[in-house]
Image 1 (cartoon, rainbow, N blue to C red):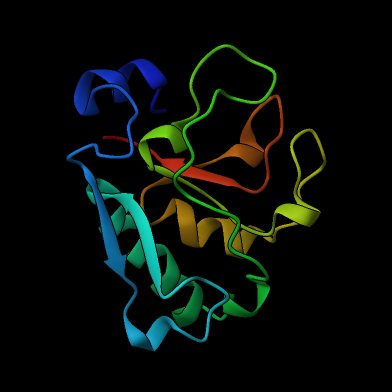
Image 2: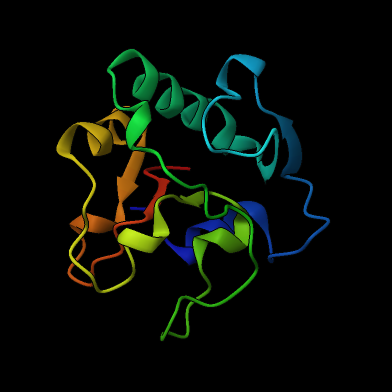
Length: 139
């Protein structure tokens, strides 16, 4: 699992002008999903995110994606002192309303597996459940 220390080492301190951050034009064939047409994210997130979204479509789980709730946000982890991986834009939140921090996640096994197979860890597997959260497995 990627840690804030690993992100700090590879990407440097969180910043809006970090050289690893880019504006990604989401491919038009994905525009039917509830995601922005452009996403400000880490370059390392593009391929895995594209893979996860394509998995959702190919495997028939795209309909389960209700909301896109963010990627880049410089902040500490909620209730903790460590920086969130969102600070380096290597994590995304989806379906936040029904998968909040500390709640039992409501995402299906198949939906989650689409993300895991694309190179993500899922917050729903953690002791402190965060079912909306997917972050890169490695950087």
